[in-house]
Length: 419
Image (cartoon, rainbow, N blue to C red):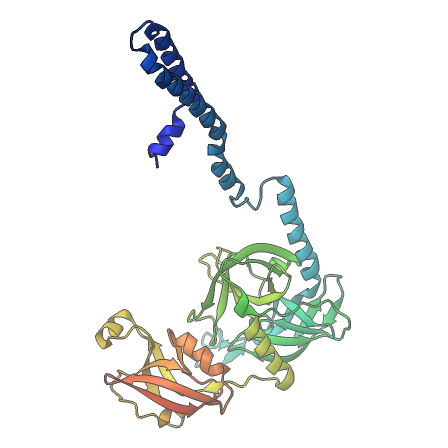
């Protein structure tokens, strides 16, 4: 902004000198005037003022650029300014890769697929009545994937679908040693499995707190895509809490754009410290290959499931006993609600069977233990994480009123539907 002072300062020093010289010229002309004695003090004072003002402006002028220089110095420096910065970043990735890859293994599972029983095509030709059947030969199937060593004694976490129906499971380390693995337990609902190999002092990865990972954080995906062991790709966390995708019964995926391809399943998703933030599990793709949407089971969920599988061989989950659906925009507008899930059905002998539901299809679960519910997947994960017998406080909207109910979580039945 320009004002009187700014205008005064912008008046160049040499301009003040020109004014002074002009006045001196007039002084020579006016010295023969009869008024000269009276004007002499005024002219001398004006000339002196002009020279002093010019000197002051010239001395002060350089200081006008100082604020701009200071502002330039405080600007944020670019993270990569030259080749040295790029080399430092590359070195960081290399260090993480060297730390992580020895703890990520290749898993091969072999299974036998029973042959189908089909009608004998020659039976009717030779006069039979079409009642004769034949069984096709059994076929051997092989599945390739990855796993992560989480304990030096040989504990490995992987995906259930990597070892599903396997008769034999072979684990290959980065140093090319091979081991026959024992299946300690598997959980199809979360797609987590735990293996054990007979080895000691193995390299391991430390579990990270997946709740602390943020969208935008850099991650590396490590695994054996297409049987290419120790493959490392880089990306970021694209989203958290992905659910209701139809991949598994319990979903709370981390989404990443780090390249994940067939064979990466069961491998590691690590942060910049080389700690395990997730287990790579699936991709969303129209082609079957990587299209920038990879999904990983968050470390906190995989760790919880894995601990139960090792100790008990199975997973125990909480149970409420309701069947729910999303609260769509149209239904929400009709009910005047923006949050919650709509209750479609209730199991009579379940904990939820104690609540006097309206039975009119307008019951909405708003909160559980004070936490707002936004989707069926969120409610499913929250209830499943509760131990049987744990206290549950439900806030339910029904017939235009909100009621609070105190229940105790039940034990989720095998192959149960709903929450």
